Image (cartoon, rainbow over all chains, first blue to last red; front, side):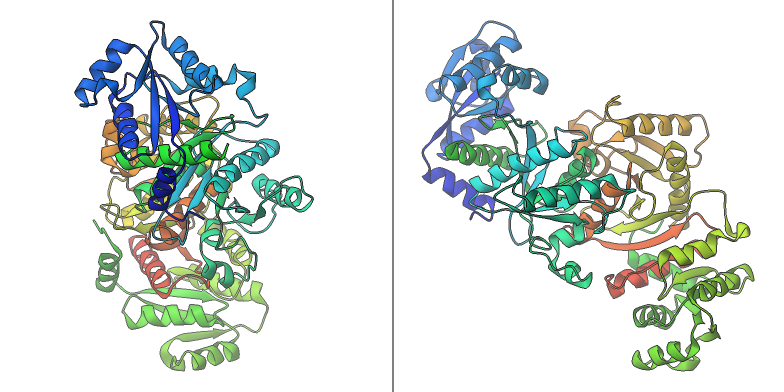
Length: 301
Length: 301
């Protein structure tokens, strides 16, 4: 089981090298991250996009042109995204990464290809490392699904568990985040929590241990859980947190990063290959971590 | 302007001493907190409840019986709560505190008395101190209102601003928490944010500067806001965060405490006097901080 990002980077270096297909690669911050991952032996890449602009960016970033294969696409960003997706379908790359193109365009290019779908919704996962918790914490869904219904929540848990398993957590402990520990008809998310626990009990949601509803304190603190008389294997020892909707997931993620000095990595899962959507505001470290996590997932696929 | 709990404690010690009416005071952890506050010169107290049991608890906590006035109520917890509220109405105490009685019972005793209402909903406020932010951060509503509508949000902001003003923040900067910065019809909380900003513009919500919708990073980090091209006085410099509903507020509060080592104090506002509801799981420090914040609010009232 990998318990921090150093171990994740090391594990990736030992694995077979995976290849990233970068859509609209004419983007300095993405090229820097990919080059860093290449130098660290974490991943190789194929750069898809406007070759002239890509090489201009490479010059600015002092990346030798022959470091990566470049696939020149003269067309617009839709075509560049489609070509990057094609490389995945042809088996030439195992991870998709967003360059200088809107998230919606690259996701559309993926969704169009039935062979890349798994039947599950796509969702984002944040892998978090904080010195205030004794292991990695996987958080869903801080970036994509606004208000998932029960079925979507089930699929998001399956997505997130696949990431946990790529990190060596065979049977992840999944906590359903709410604001309290009791089922309350005035709080629909507590009813969803009860249903998810039941699905886990009857085998609809397999290969994990689900607990909830929980408020955050009882998810991450054994002492808090004991204080409240909560005795559940997930309490104080969760691997995965499922938030009820986007605001709480996004806020928890950003609170850990900006008010708790946590390290993080974000990936999109639910398609046949992981997708990396780094943003300009991400630190160099965060981008490298995201590539490493995606590489681990791809290696398990 | 008070910027941390040390300054809050000092300010309280310099102010006129306020008196706490403790409902169902036969509770060791509450008596310990009240005694600590008394010894530090922060507050005095009147203990309402079963005198015999109160004195038994005082013995266990090694509190001399003559430290506090005890009002013996033979009746049940409803009657003990009612008597504690009566002391507020008679002007004998300025802060109400929950002892060994359910929150719902003590709140009912308050709500029954029209003279104690302000016309606003009651809401909880968490005052947070973290080394990852340059000043105190007030967070609403982590404990009471499940899914406030626009009007309730307006009232909760007014409640929270009254606490900010008691801390010396004359014109608090209020950030409306969402998961993104743009108004999005699929995210009703962003529409509420826009409406609250408009209410601030047209004078319906006074004596504060409201900004939003914001995701958390742009509320607490100037660098993140600048990275996103957000140039608003509230961005990266908020005094108050209004969360859209209970789960995100509760999760942010607990994330700061359990995953970010923040110090905190919680009070209930919206009635004529502040109400303190500490829980057994709160640290000694948290309970003392709550009493100090309530004392500041009472002194301003």
